[in-house]
Image (cartoon, rainbow, N blue to C red):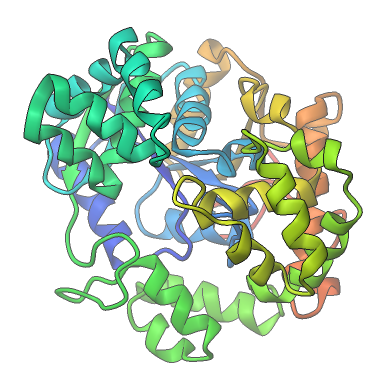
Length: 403
């Protein structure tokens, strides 16, 4: 039996995500079990997730996923490398995942793994460091280093989905995971595209519409069951927007010393000094981040760094391997994967929140969950204790039950 992992944010779940699930099953067989590793309360671009992990896991379950696992904040808020390493680490630790499916801009899995191997070579790393000294961004330096080996094909690393796919490939190689990569050609709008293509939007386009109050248009690109879940969460006030928590973030960042700023994930080469000056000059976090960014340090990296400061996440926490696997949702077929994981998992699999009480990283994720509520219009819409009380969403009634 094929059990295929997928790393996702589903922020929110749209037609393109359903297309990926369907094409993965078509490629591997209709009896394939799909296991999604889903960013929890915060996402890799350095923002709160629109909806809670349970709501997005429920969306995934309604569209064909069989089992949904949580990707904790330290990995969800890492660079592409850390994001991939954390997610692949969780899927590999489950002990039963046979494949890993990801979208690309038409680049196959063999080429992805070839690029991944090259990126892990000492020569590539050494040449990347040499090019960095010229002041260019890390991405540009890495491309130049690869150009010396594969010429024009190095330009593939300008494609957003290929960048992430190669990080998945690197993680598979570094972990020696017996998991086969599966590349699915992306359809429709590209990453961060602000207009849909062929009826398929980017998640960035949808979030922009929702933030602007044009929710009806955004929801037209969601599958019907996902629209229903979104409206329910919105009605109960559980819709998180970055702007709503900016003052809380700014207040926390103002209180951090230069030493504390220098210890944040992403801080390097004196970046903390530039960020500290910008924080003290501005009454707006957005303005401070804009003033801090450079060609080498883009906004996405700075937003992640700022959120880590707000959440109290350290470099050590973001670099440590996962220490638990939390189940967010499970369907009827997903129970088969859970049964296998009980025998084969290298980490504790948590289906009842009480099982995580003795795991420090699980407790830290609970702190992140509470801080996520500060991005809601009414933080009281999210119970502080919910993280420790809510079990996985199940398929039959699509509600949370204990196992």
